[in-house]
Length: 158
Image (cartoon, rainbow, N blue to C red; front, side):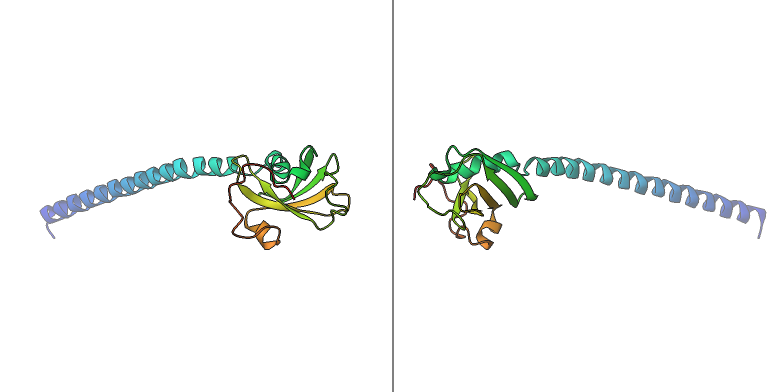
């Protein structure tokens, strides 16, 4: 090989290496941009999802909104399974329309006045309830699938 051939070959290798490095930088930059876009989508989505979690206060409001007999009972609930199952105790016994509340099921109604689940009384005096939201209330046979999501403008009677 001549000096000229070696110089030409060296120049070609140098250009190829520079192009390869530039391509690597572009790929890294592209990966960084993709990661930033993904974070911009995922993080607010996670924040929105977290804000959609059903808190105990919403469940506590939904119990008397579903059944007139439970109005004024001041429920206090704790989470059993997040967004699905709640253990609730009433400060006052329900109205005496039912002599033995144990096993009685009642719907719950959300702030938009739609059936969002239901509760089952665990005690005869009606002060301890297990409440379920969404499809779990249907699986627990507290409400029918066709009743979930129905508009309920006022608490049910009877």
